Image 1 (cartoon, rainbow, N blue to C red):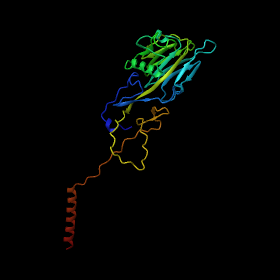
Image 2: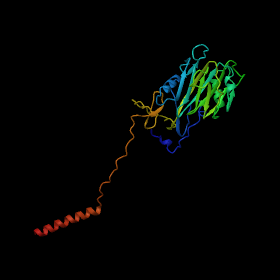
Image 3: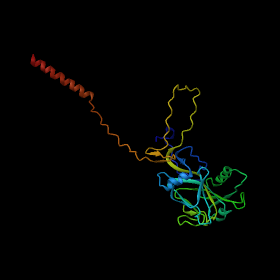
Image 4: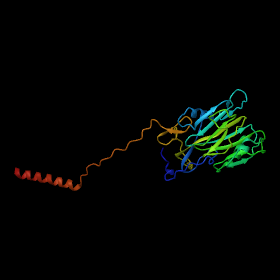
Length: 305
């Protein structure tokens, strides 16, 4: 992928933390952009469990009673105290990936009671919209990496408990409602090797919503600033449609979810053949050649005479 002329000499940006550009945005200058996953949470889990190249999770564990909701952007882990296994899940972020998640449990004050280490606390009000409450939680987390946000005990909704948190590459979350799986923790959010929850079972329903998934691509330049419009452009009577812009660097292709992955058919170009300079015949040599020819002709004429 060619770098626009306006980006030549612009430095490459380091990968931002999950608590930068929280609203699915990107740096406006420099080389490096996030690519946001365009599939659903269910598709992300399924493709990751299948080991598809470019998937956002690794070490996927999911089972028991569960239900995908809200156009598959949310998975509900269902509590069952009978003979059926309650829901459980464990998701670890793949290399280069980040995610932002919202979790609610019907176990009142669970997250506030079990949060440890760096924790931001705030309100969650039933009389406000979900997006407004989530935006308030994100503002508390903005540039506060690493940490998690939890609903403070006794503030807002008294029937549920909530947390909002980000995960970076290698971080994971794991929940097992009734401690019935040997492959999942009871309640764990682990960031950079640090646990942010006591490992206690919720023993109640859990709803996990994926706010966004994204992958940092250090080779994609920020978009050129919008040029000033031509005050009186001449319309093209039969314009050709603009080709779709390249979204991936050379040697990569976008997968079905808009994420750049290695192109299996890409062959790096070989070195250009060396151009050999043509023989250079100087003006002096040409003159000497002509003089020689003249002498030969002159001698031949004298001999003939």
